[in-house]
Amino acid sequence: MLTRIRKTNGMYDGTAASWEEKDLDGSIGRILNKAAQGVPLEREEVITLLSVDAAGDAAALLHQAGRVAAHRFSNNQGRVWAAIGVDYQPCPMNCRFCAFGEGWGIVRSAMEWPVERIEAQAVDFADQGAHWITLRTTEHYSIDRLCSLCRRIIRATRGKVKLAANTGELTRASAGRLREAGFTTVYHSCRLREGTDTTLSADIRLSTMKAVRDAGLDLAHLVEPVGVEHSPREIADCLLQALAHGASLTGAMARVPVPGTPLAVHGPLLKPELARIVAVTRIVAGPRATDICVHPPCREGLQAGANTVVVETGAVPREMEATRSEWQAFTISEARALLASAGYNVSNA
Image 1 (cartoon, rainbow, N blue to C red):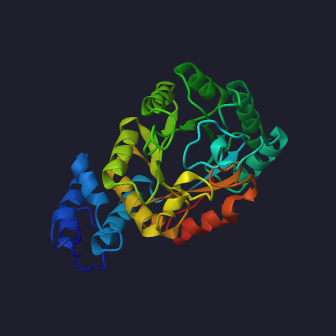
Image 2: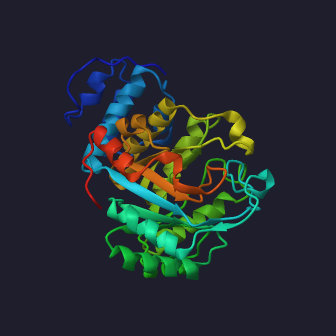
Image 3: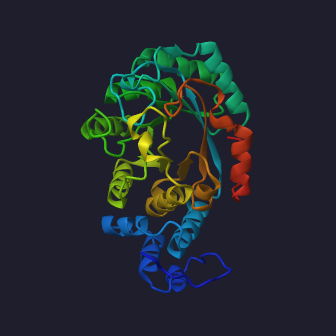
């Protein structure tokens, strides 16, 4: 769908007709006006937004609307989300996009960072201004150990950074233990083509998401891992499902084609495609999600409405071996500079 846009120098002024005035064909503008007025969009409207030409004028309008929504709902605050991959080993689940799948023969032995190293890295991330630190663990890392690690990091960082868990499936009881230990957030997603490109059922993933919310924890859920083969309908359903389960942080994560994994044959998702999805997530989420993340980090995604980027280290499922420093050499300092260059205010957490 190609839509012509009336060229203007001003930003969205908050009036009901603003987006429609910029969209000479009216179709996209009417949907954006509806979202700007706080009216939830219908599934078909979300699909319409996701179907625009990522390199066309309509996508440029989406980017502008997404960036205006980011200013409104995130108070123009840029945030850095740091993640420490604590452990990995060959995984029998064999998700078709993950380097850890034992069937792909990429990861051949177990790896686990010692707690002293995790603590030191967390302190460093906190001191540099990370807003959240995620401890990413496999299901082989017990809840007891994860809770102990959380308490240790809270003490070491003097509680100045929020901690998130990214681990295996949870019950209401185990999610409650994470909250009692000091975690504020759990990252968990029902991924695109769950049960087809993974061996876990969507119902199991959704059950954990419900347990997270029932335990009083914030849910972070990106639309992921997005590849070139995913349709606007699939992406829309993933986004709407995340919001229906109360995700307070969402966004989009492009699949990184790890050589040797089955889905690597599709190649990478182009940045304009990722930016379009980011813009739609920001527009559709409205006040339900304060923060929108783009991963891997890119300026295009920030200009389209994302206000959060991720810095990773340790075990990264998009890498063929453990990362000794920051993944792809993307540091907290670079993350803050990237957010600032996109016009966000970036303060210490």
